Image (cartoon, rainbow, N blue to C red; front, top):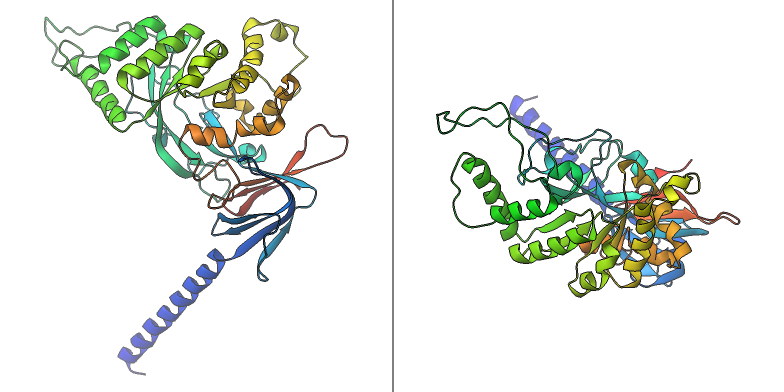
Length: 419
């Protein structure tokens, strides 16, 4: 056979093969999935006692009790199950390793540079966590920009939903009492000598706010640390221009007042995190639409084992804090106060039913509320038309206080199933 003819035939075959693959791929992508018969809690007010969810291309295209199911749809029977949106962890490092940063101000640092997108987050998925805010380490005053990811497991990579979601500011003891560090000036001179180490910046929360206000001033810096300050100031100005939110981790109620004043002065949206005394500012937080990421010092089987814990004032404040904020209408997201507690978010939220808070109201704190806090409620956080099909299947069992998680769906694919 003529060589040119063989090449032509090979090209035609390759094109036909590519077209076949594309058509096959389109068929897979266009496949309709119907979840039928489950009790659907949308987190937007509706509860369908025996509803249907239609999914195409990883998105919810229809939901309700009288949704017609196409004949060629793949059916997932969900009778006897409660369906919730995938949980959204509002704060976490998402790594088993302890992260450290040895400068007081690193506003340019990004969670995207350290997060393992190929990591296996099966343990979090087993707890129902499908999305999360990847925070920066809390041992520096300005530790950098966190991002929002949708978690993957095994061969499924994690995806970035929002690369720059908020700037982390920390007022804990580790942040405002940093260790000695080496800073080498260049060029070295009599006026600018080489010293072995210097004490880093503020040693109080009030001093931290004062120094942060200085970093936002529009005048050039001078002196030994001019370049260091100028680089930090330039980065903060970019965050300010982009309208990035500030997540301020507070220790006490006095820090909240300073955080509110600071956010107003720099004209950046504020999110309060950490302090168990946020409830003392509930009315002001509600009035100014300032959300709270509230930390709960709880783990399954831990309550009742330690009298020291029950008698601890900080722990008691945390128990009062969350129900008070919810009742006063503050936008609240509950998170664990330790990284290892993130897979237990469902149990942690349901603990607060003993304070008279409705179960669905508590589920909102780990679904639609954090989605609203980070501006992603158009994509995740509730089961409504047009949103990602991130769905949790909980099985109801008689005599069991809490339903058990059986399946986790992310963007229309089952990525975890209890065997």
